Length: 190
Ligand SMILES: C[S@@+](CC[C@H](N)C(=O)[O-])C[C@H]1O[C@@H](n2cnc3c(N)ncnc32)[C@H](O)[C@@H]1O
Image 1 (cartoon, rainbow, N blue to C red):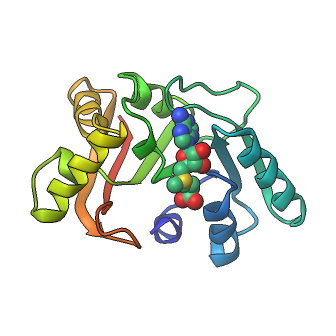
Image 2: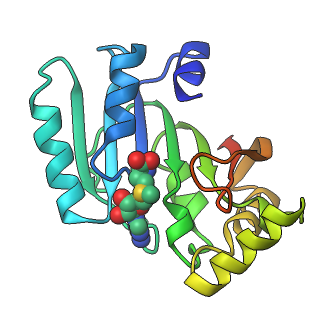
């Protein structure tokens, strides 16, 4: 999906927030992301950032930078040069944060003059109950203290005029865990 989005429009950089050891960014690079694009990964764990940096150092053609990032207190070092037009994405990482702050979208939308963001996060149950999977999913998230406010915070940011929601798809894939189905939300700067 990210490769398709990168093929539709030209971006200066692609940024994954909550990137772990950067596997998605490496896959994007080797699947046609190209050498003109800059790759950035923000991650909460020190081990993730260190491993991502080590892996990136093996590929001299990939312009990659990895940095500390916490969804609970989103902020970006001014030294990070993302360029003018950026594609941000998150993949099953906001799921692990009970409540993102109200300003998450405003802060992320301010990192460049044009930002488009694609979320692949399991938030379908926060919008409506689509059946047994949604209900089990909700119960699991409540029990484990996982995210319950992604959808409401996204909608508020849209209503406040901080961002424009472009698209959403609920529970479009299950991956390996039938009780953690992925939903998609796409937004951009105003
Ligand atoms: C299931 S892994 C997904 C990693 C990566 N997005 C992928 O698809 O391979 C969840 C990631 O979210 C990160 N994470 C958890 N809490 C976070 C937080 N508060 N801020 C940023 N990242 C966080 C974890 O350290 C982990 O790397």
